[in-house]
Length: 208
Image (cartoon, rainbow, N blue to C red):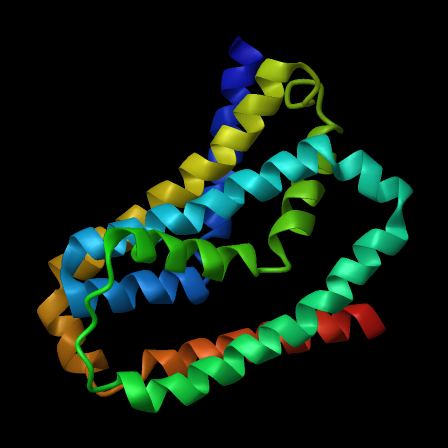
């Protein structure tokens, strides 16, 4: 039990720090809080944490299988590039249409928005697979028993959730100041550039 707790805390810390980078989910949480207040932003954050659970679990339970079938993983890596480009272009096209419209989606669509942005991140699975491999080099962090596997997955979720909820609360607290500075910026365009950049990085990684 002590080892499982240590794994959970270590994974949560790594997840929190890893989520500090400004990405699609972070930006969307900020954008949603600015446009529609804290509750909607928290729902986006909640949806954005679900893929952390999925990919961390995949790293634990499917990592070994993918290592034995590299062609499948290679195909998934290449398939993510056109998807990311399509999302970036869609965001560019939608920015002009949505800039002056009031947003009123339901709570379910807020969760789905966060989930969709995070699930398409091609870096999440290899990131958690890499962390898992690093843990295997330390006896105190080696993930083997079911309780340790659950601790690893839950740590990934809790760390990301803490960071995204923190972003939402800070955005809500300083909402007026941020609106004054970011009110004229099209966050859809910014998100579009981020997705195109992710596609470019993925392509560079595959051809280098």
